[in-house]
Image 1 (cartoon, rainbow, N blue to C red):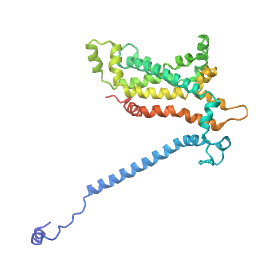
Image 2 (spheres, one colour; image 1 turned 45 degrees about the vertical axis):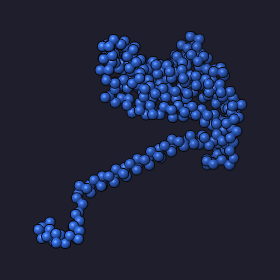
Image 3 (cartoon, rainbow, N blue to C red; image 1 turned 180 degrees about the vertical axis):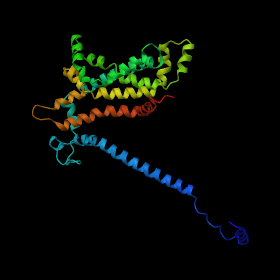
Image 4 (cartoon, helix red, strand yellow; image 1 turned 90 degrees about the horizontal axis):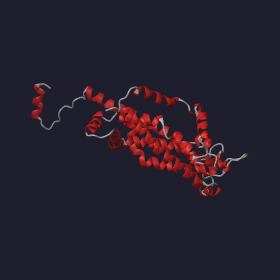
Length: 306
């Protein structure tokens, strides 16, 4: 602005100053923010679509649980039934010993989850914080067993349990699933995020390795323990092949095996199967809602060494 313009503004104070054009930098910032807003909106839309695709089978299962058998597999799918059969959720308790099946599933899930968390965290401490010859090679060999399909060693496992006299007992499933390479891997990755100085200071104070694991490592690894417990509980609760192979007594069946009672030689009560499936999902939902905070934190921090 030249001197003449300044004099005009001084002589006419009521006139507003000449508006300045926005700089190129501010326009670039505005454009960047607009692109960020569009990208975030597209991401939310994509996540909503994926969530709807995942929840669609569960919605169909829940709706089918209040239909009769003929309406379950109608084409096209009738999302709003003409009549609701809420008595499916009461009749199922009368037709099969559902309480026994749920109790067996809960017992196996709790015991196996406790043992996997105990053994996995204990072994992971040795692989993460102790030094011994061949530690890394032994760990890699142990983790490599995750890639071996269960069908490859299913028959040898059954022969061992049969010779031990544990077939048709809960001990067969408990001993087979009490140890898991995935749990060791998950806990070891979390233990690596804990500074070694903490365990070194505890050793200088005279604590044994067992005390360091129990009094220091376990309290610091609550998110990882919750993640492992939730994953193990869900996997054990939904297990079908294990109980199907090892449990033949009806009083030992889990809920996944018990739902087969509605499948006959010539027909099946699909509405009852859906009602039982909805009931079997409730414990998983409750466990996840109670531990989702620790579960998300454990998954987010595992493997991030700080």
